Length: 288
Image 1 (cartoon, rainbow, N blue to C red):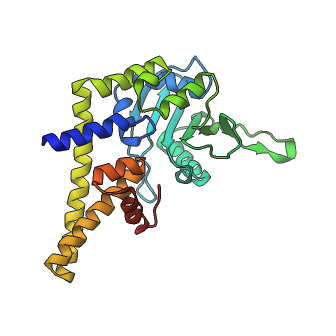
Image 2 (image 1 turned 30 degrees about the horizontal axis):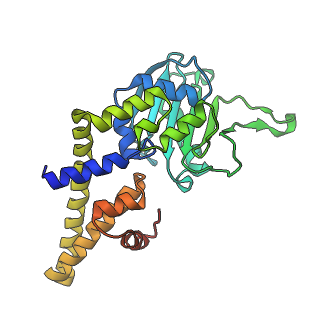
């Protein structure tokens, strides 16, 4: 990897936070103790023990929309947890929780399962902004029976919105502070601080992050060249080349936005102004 490219990626890594999707993949990889600690904090518990977990598990559906949950966890009692991290509340609508719940139900139901053996499922969406703007640390969503004085329905489905803006002096407040922090030295949760420190200071982990960023960039450059060639056939080689370069930037800007990067980081990666990034995103009716 060229030195200039490597430095660019290292600069990006310095600004990444646990809220950033691409950083989260490395942070929680082979880090069972950290995932277990975070899960217990989110649910205000201390007794959850993880049996196994997967990051970005591709749950393919043949006749319907597939999903790729951020972190899917199974505890030692067989309960299932899905932790989703979203910078924008707009990307975490209630319909998405509903659909994820249905896919997880099917994914973890064996053909011979009895209905009373269906797993307890917990879906937690951590959004950087307060989803309901009411200041609560967590919003618990459970079905109730209206005619029975809102008695719990007990369908074993538990949905949560976690407020990423919550900053009280308790473990959840510290965790949300740390999720928004790029400087590991300012983090409060010890396990999270140490894991971030390793990624940002040890050569092996930094190189792994650089390679992940490079792989992502290559994918977007290839897509940009392909779109440019198509335009070149229609508009001529010169115009196609210019359009290809623009499409490459648009494609990269869009995908970095979807992965949670902010405008400043995207503008530095594309070597253009923040206003130019906004213009590129606007062409696809997106914003950060």
